[in-house]
Image 1 (cartoon, rainbow, N blue to C red):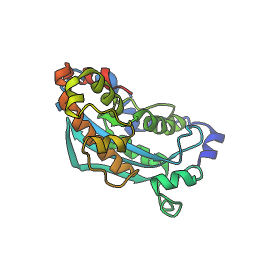
Image 2 (cartoon, helix red, strand yellow):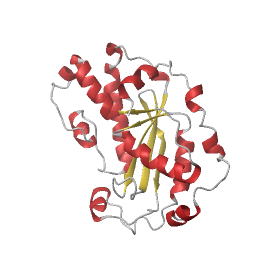
Image 3 (cartoon, rainbow, N blue to C red):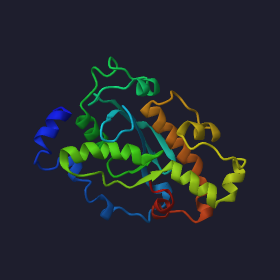
Length: 234
Protein backbone atom coordinates (compact mmCIF):
# COMPACT_ATOMS: atom_id res chain seq x y z
CA UNK A 1 0.00 0.00 0.00
CA UNK A 2 1.60 3.31 -1.02
CA UNK A 3 1.87 6.38 1.19
CA UNK A 4 -0.98 8.28 -0.50
CA UNK A 5 -3.40 5.39 -0.06
CA UNK A 6 -2.40 5.04 3.58
CA UNK A 7 -3.13 8.73 4.13
CA UNK A 8 -6.56 8.39 2.45
CA UNK A 9 -7.58 5.28 4.36
CA UNK A 10 -5.93 6.29 7.62
CA UNK A 11 -4.23 3.87 9.98
CA UNK A 12 -5.79 0.42 9.60
CA UNK A 13 -7.78 -0.67 12.61
CA UNK A 14 -6.03 -4.01 13.00
CA UNK A 15 -4.49 -5.92 15.85
CA UNK A 16 -0.77 -5.37 16.27
CA UNK A 17 1.34 -8.07 14.59
CA UNK A 18 3.12 -10.45 16.93
CA UNK A 19 6.54 -8.93 16.15
CA UNK A 20 5.30 -5.56 17.38
CA UNK A 21 2.96 -6.65 20.15
CA UNK A 22 5.68 -8.60 21.95
CA UNK A 23 7.86 -5.55 22.51
CA UNK A 24 5.26 -3.07 23.72
CA UNK A 25 5.90 -3.94 27.38
CA UNK A 26 9.64 -4.08 26.89
CA UNK A 27 10.68 -1.22 29.16
CA UNK A 28 8.77 -2.52 32.16
CA UNK A 29 10.34 -5.96 31.93
CA UNK A 30 13.90 -4.90 31.07
CA UNK A 31 16.60 -5.20 33.73
CA UNK A 32 18.29 -1.80 33.71
CA UNK A 33 20.61 -2.84 36.55
CA UNK A 34 22.42 -5.24 34.21
CA UNK A 35 26.10 -4.44 33.71
CA UNK A 36 26.92 -2.89 30.35
CA UNK A 37 29.03 -5.87 29.28
CA UNK A 38 25.98 -8.14 29.66
CA UNK A 39 23.57 -6.00 27.65
CA UNK A 40 22.47 -6.90 24.11
CA UNK A 41 22.90 -3.90 21.81
CA UNK A 42 22.11 -3.20 18.16
CA UNK A 43 24.02 -0.41 16.44
CA UNK A 44 22.01 0.86 13.48
CA UNK A 45 21.76 3.57 10.87
CA UNK A 46 19.34 4.65 8.17
CA UNK A 47 19.85 6.35 4.84
CA UNK A 48 17.14 8.84 3.94
CA UNK A 49 15.87 10.84 0.99
CA UNK A 50 16.45 13.90 3.18
CA UNK A 51 15.97 15.19 6.71
CA UNK A 52 12.48 16.66 6.33
CA UNK A 53 10.56 14.44 8.72
CA UNK A 54 7.20 15.17 7.07
CA UNK A 55 8.28 14.72 3.46
CA UNK A 56 11.28 12.38 3.37
CA UNK A 57 11.56 8.63 3.85
CA UNK A 58 13.95 5.77 4.57
CA UNK A 59 15.77 4.13 1.65
CA UNK A 60 18.00 1.71 3.60
CA UNK A 61 18.55 0.34 7.10
CA UNK A 62 21.75 -1.28 8.35
CA UNK A 63 22.52 -2.80 11.75
CA UNK A 64 24.91 -5.04 13.66
CA UNK A 65 24.48 -6.74 17.04
CA UNK A 66 26.79 -6.46 20.03
CA UNK A 67 27.07 -8.26 23.35
CA UNK A 68 28.37 -5.54 25.60
CA UNK A 69 31.13 -4.03 23.46
CA UNK A 70 31.80 -7.24 21.52
CA UNK A 71 30.60 -6.86 17.93
CA UNK A 72 28.93 -10.00 16.55
CA UNK A 73 29.96 -9.91 12.86
CA UNK A 74 27.62 -12.75 11.89
CA UNK A 75 24.58 -10.93 13.33
CA UNK A 76 23.91 -8.19 10.78
CA UNK A 77 21.03 -6.56 8.91
CA UNK A 78 21.02 -4.58 5.67
CA UNK A 79 18.04 -3.88 3.43
CA UNK A 80 17.14 -1.44 0.69
CA UNK A 81 13.75 0.27 0.85
CA UNK A 82 11.52 1.45 -1.96
CA UNK A 83 11.33 5.24 -1.43
CA UNK A 84 7.93 6.72 -0.70
CA UNK A 85 8.94 10.07 -2.19
CA UNK A 86 11.16 11.31 -4.97
CA UNK A 87 14.91 11.00 -4.55
CA UNK A 88 16.66 14.34 -4.30
CA UNK A 89 19.88 15.04 -6.15
CA UNK A 90 21.56 16.20 -2.92
CA UNK A 91 20.74 12.97 -1.10
CA UNK A 92 21.82 10.81 -4.06
CA UNK A 93 25.25 12.46 -3.93
CA UNK A 94 25.48 11.54 -0.23
CA UNK A 95 24.26 7.93 -0.18
CA UNK A 96 24.85 7.10 -3.87
CA UNK A 97 21.59 5.17 -4.16
CA UNK A 98 19.73 5.92 -7.39
CA UNK A 99 16.27 5.03 -8.66
CA UNK A 100 17.75 2.10 -10.58
CA UNK A 101 19.42 0.82 -7.39
CA UNK A 102 16.07 0.88 -5.63
CA UNK A 103 13.87 -0.58 -8.39
CA UNK A 104 13.80 -3.99 -6.71
CA UNK A 105 13.88 -2.65 -3.15
CA UNK A 106 11.26 -3.76 -0.64
CA UNK A 107 8.26 -2.02 0.86
CA UNK A 108 9.12 0.07 3.90
CA UNK A 109 6.72 -1.76 6.22
CA UNK A 110 8.22 -5.14 5.35
CA UNK A 111 11.74 -3.88 6.03
CA UNK A 112 10.83 -2.11 9.27
CA UNK A 113 8.99 -5.23 10.43
CA UNK A 114 12.05 -7.39 9.81
CA UNK A 115 14.24 -4.78 11.49
CA UNK A 116 12.07 -4.82 14.62
CA UNK A 117 12.31 -8.61 14.71
CA UNK A 118 16.09 -8.40 14.30
CA UNK A 119 16.38 -5.88 17.14
CA UNK A 120 14.08 -7.84 19.46
CA UNK A 121 14.68 -6.52 23.00
CA UNK A 122 18.17 -5.09 22.41
CA UNK A 123 19.22 -1.57 23.35
CA UNK A 124 19.68 0.54 20.23
CA UNK A 125 22.86 2.51 19.53
CA UNK A 126 23.08 5.29 16.98
CA UNK A 127 24.93 8.49 16.18
CA UNK A 128 22.35 11.27 16.50
CA UNK A 129 20.05 8.30 16.88
CA UNK A 130 16.92 10.41 17.40
CA UNK A 131 16.87 11.09 13.64
CA UNK A 132 16.87 7.39 12.74
CA UNK A 133 14.36 6.56 15.47
CA UNK A 134 12.00 9.29 14.31
CA UNK A 135 11.87 7.89 10.78
CA UNK A 136 11.43 4.27 11.93
CA UNK A 137 8.74 5.31 14.41
CA UNK A 138 7.01 7.36 11.73
CA UNK A 139 6.38 4.14 9.80
CA UNK A 140 5.11 2.33 12.90
CA UNK A 141 2.83 5.18 13.94
CA UNK A 142 1.36 5.58 10.45
CA UNK A 143 0.52 1.89 10.23
CA UNK A 144 -0.13 0.81 13.83
CA UNK A 145 -0.21 3.91 16.03
CA UNK A 146 2.72 2.77 18.20
CA UNK A 147 6.47 3.40 18.50
CA UNK A 148 9.49 1.27 19.34
CA UNK A 149 9.87 0.71 23.07
CA UNK A 150 13.55 -0.23 22.98
CA UNK A 151 15.94 1.85 25.04
CA UNK A 152 18.46 3.80 22.98
CA UNK A 153 21.85 5.41 23.54
CA UNK A 154 23.51 8.05 21.38
CA UNK A 155 27.25 7.88 20.69
CA UNK A 156 27.38 11.64 20.04
CA UNK A 157 25.80 12.36 23.44
CA UNK A 158 28.04 9.79 25.14
CA UNK A 159 31.13 11.33 23.56
CA UNK A 160 30.24 14.83 24.71
CA UNK A 161 29.50 13.64 28.24
CA UNK A 162 32.83 11.81 28.48
CA UNK A 163 34.70 14.74 27.03
CA UNK A 164 33.22 17.08 29.65
CA UNK A 165 33.29 14.65 32.58
CA UNK A 166 36.50 12.63 32.32
CA UNK A 167 39.82 14.39 31.91
CA UNK A 168 41.46 11.00 31.21
CA UNK A 169 39.31 10.63 28.12
CA UNK A 170 40.31 14.03 26.75
CA UNK A 171 43.96 13.43 27.61
CA UNK A 172 43.97 9.99 26.03
CA UNK A 173 42.77 11.50 22.78
CA UNK A 174 45.04 14.55 23.07
CA UNK A 175 42.36 16.90 24.28
CA UNK A 176 41.32 18.05 20.84
CA UNK A 177 37.82 19.23 20.09
CA UNK A 178 36.39 17.80 16.89
CA UNK A 179 33.37 18.01 14.66
CA UNK A 180 30.54 15.84 15.91
CA UNK A 181 29.57 14.11 12.65
CA UNK A 182 30.15 10.36 12.45
CA UNK A 183 33.05 10.42 10.01
CA UNK A 184 35.00 13.16 11.81
CA UNK A 185 34.73 11.14 15.01
CA UNK A 186 35.69 7.94 13.20
CA UNK A 187 38.88 9.57 11.91
CA UNK A 188 39.65 11.04 15.33
CA UNK A 189 39.25 7.78 17.22
CA UNK A 190 40.95 5.51 14.70
CA UNK A 191 37.85 3.75 13.39
CA UNK A 192 38.06 2.29 9.90
CA UNK A 193 35.47 3.94 7.70
CA UNK A 194 34.39 1.74 4.85
CA UNK A 195 32.02 3.27 2.33
CA UNK A 196 30.71 6.64 3.45
CA UNK A 197 26.99 6.94 4.02
CA UNK A 198 26.14 3.31 3.54
CA UNK A 199 23.69 2.33 6.28
CA UNK A 200 25.49 -0.87 7.22
CA UNK A 201 28.99 0.67 7.13
CA UNK A 202 27.75 3.59 9.23
CA UNK A 203 26.19 1.22 11.75
CA UNK A 204 29.48 -0.67 12.01
CA UNK A 205 31.40 2.59 12.53
CA UNK A 206 28.93 3.54 15.27
CA UNK A 207 29.47 0.17 16.98
CA UNK A 208 33.25 0.73 16.91
CA UNK A 209 32.92 4.22 18.38
CA UNK A 210 30.85 2.71 21.19
CA UNK A 211 33.71 0.26 21.76
CA UNK A 212 36.16 3.17 22.06
CA UNK A 213 34.06 5.07 24.59
CA UNK A 214 32.76 2.40 26.98
CA UNK A 215 36.13 1.52 28.64
CA UNK A 216 36.24 5.01 30.13
CA UNK A 217 32.81 4.71 31.77
CA UNK A 218 33.64 2.65 34.91
CA UNK A 219 36.09 5.34 36.01
CA UNK A 220 33.17 7.79 35.90
CA UNK A 221 30.92 5.52 37.95
CA UNK A 222 28.93 4.30 34.94
CA UNK A 223 28.73 0.51 35.07
CA UNK A 224 25.11 -0.46 34.45
CA UNK A 225 22.63 0.14 31.65
CA UNK A 226 20.62 2.42 33.93
CA UNK A 227 23.68 4.62 34.47
CA UNK A 228 24.55 4.53 30.77
CA UNK A 229 21.07 5.70 29.84
CA UNK A 230 21.44 8.68 32.17
CA UNK A 231 24.51 9.97 30.31
CA UNK A 232 23.86 8.81 26.73
CA UNK A 233 20.12 8.99 26.20
CA UNK A 234 19.15 10.68 22.89
